[in-house]
Length: 221
Image (cartoon, rainbow, N blue to C red; front, side):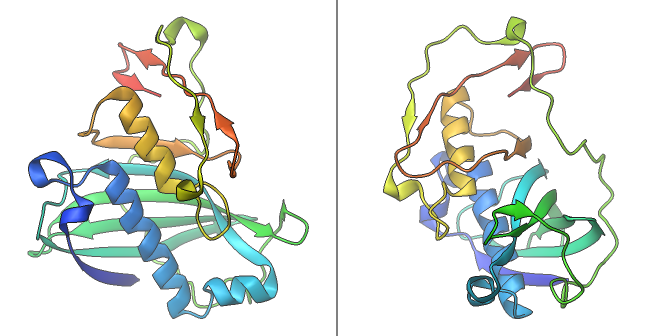
């Protein structure tokens, strides 16, 4: 298990001095990369080997959001490997050791030279020690898109990918999609979220948002 200590800063919170789901995603991303760097599988290793884990999806459940100046511990550990997939848990603890966020994530191992999935070798997985999975109600790997009858009748503006959206891979940062989605539904206190990443957007791409709402399920996609 890998952990990092953080103090919630002013730039990481919004109204009410409270972090939202996009801020949670940024913490989880930072913890993932810090873990990989600690076992010698960080950005330099990826550049040399052209092999890397790409995020496929999040399942995040928030008990309560971190607040301004709060000290928290972000933890992560892999709990399973199956073929080209890796499964990684996270949690966030408050200063008293209480869990306030729990997360599952799914990753796919990629051959970057061929830009296709490949099965990781023992060397690729070196340093990533498995631990027990969190007790969660684990969702399926893929999100089934709702049918048109659930589509919200609204004209959402298209989103053009700008340089500020990009990460070191020149793809839209994973957390940026979450920020944009939160703006669409005008809801900053989402407590449960699933994200299914299927294709990376790059500079100049145009994204066309849509919202689907199922009142019976109480869900928005």
